[in-house]
Length: 447
Image (tube, rainbow, N blue to C red; front, side, top):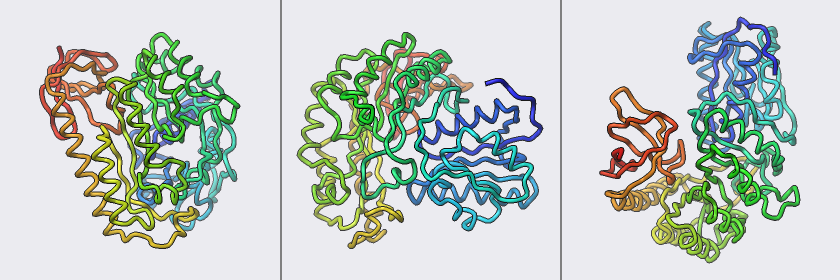
């Protein structure tokens, strides 16, 4: 894309939400920069503030609305001229967003992402609020030419959009549409671009990565894609995120086992373990199948680290069902775990279910489960003392203390390796020895 003449407007950008949203933010930042606008690190003093929002669950929506309110307050104080809200929240709420927060100048749905520069230009010269929405973003976006928010040595690589699963608690299909695989050729081109720019780690993301290629009539789409990504010479780590457990088959496990680049770290959101709750969630899994999956993965993938996601307080969840979940967590010994309270989201099947669990009970269960997981994680960390790890350095401060990750730590969501006397630069791999722990983090020394 040819760079346009310099625009005088200064743009502040606020990026919220999940990795998929981060990619959208990076693409919009690139479009804004290519259009010649200046981008500031101080949104409070920008001519136009663009807020890319998440609207998946109540806390994300609250965070987004708070950021919008702050920008509108800056506008009222005269330090900001225009406020534009993009992403999942406008896609979900539409024009209702104007009613919820007075002072927004434009709302931009997911399907208008690549038009953000033109929309900014129109908004600057308009005195009336405007909505740039599509009913459902059915197209596959080209995510190349992003302005990365992450360090240059690692990046997210999105392989699909939307979701075909009908989980009763989830708003994603309503927001992002049905599942669409990105063409393999486009994914490989984007991966090559990211690696040529310095990325040695690619984190593969989608709403469900294991579903990749199904809509393209590919039987083992993810396995085939991984084998082609491995051929990118300078790529060292490939990390698979969001693996829907019911779709993990022997072919995929074999592909990971044979790979020299796919790290033995699997992010498998199980959500729950009780069969009645799983059925109410419209999940195809059962406790027995999930248990067999975990028993199958660890011996076939040496050193395999497992991350999962759990929901507590789903409608009708009893003490017995919660205790069953707790016992399973103790048995499974997940290396990392994210836990969320069930949030009643309008438009989902679970929102209409009887026997909603009181919030106080949800909070108690969340705390109990996370304390159980904390003991597991701390014990695993303690057992690593004395072991040697290869770490990817993420940053080094002025005092020589580095922060990095071994293969079992995904960026942004997991713990870190804190490296004493680090002589390496960000993006380099180093050999380390674990000498201690600090909460969830590992203390390591460079060898």
